[in-house]
Length: 164
Image (tube, rainbow, N blue to C red):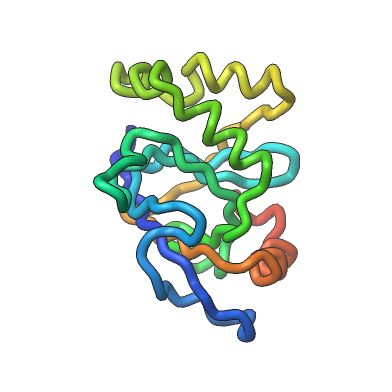
């Protein structure tokens, strides 16, 4: 693992589509604060950041689980250290998180396996979710700013296919 750290936050701005400042710690629909980056993967024309949670609210109850969120970029110049995520998790992203967050997967990762080598990762492909790792260079520290669905889609349309 590259030891790249991701910090999660979200933007509550509803009116200004160009405003993506981090306003709140954690994420809107769960309590993850930080994690270790496992990579950016694509599936069905969507890009997903996978990370293993290292810090969460609620007595770190989510530590060790796999956080999956659909991401896009805000600006090509800062794409290696700032990503935007959709505040409304899709069924596919929730399925990926659920299947990859097993005790067995946690153990496989602790034993040094990459996420792609885990048993659960192979199960996703059987369900039709074939995750392909993207050659995307990230900084040692990455900020993921969750934004509302309409805002996310506007950035996604602007930069679709540029996430490589």
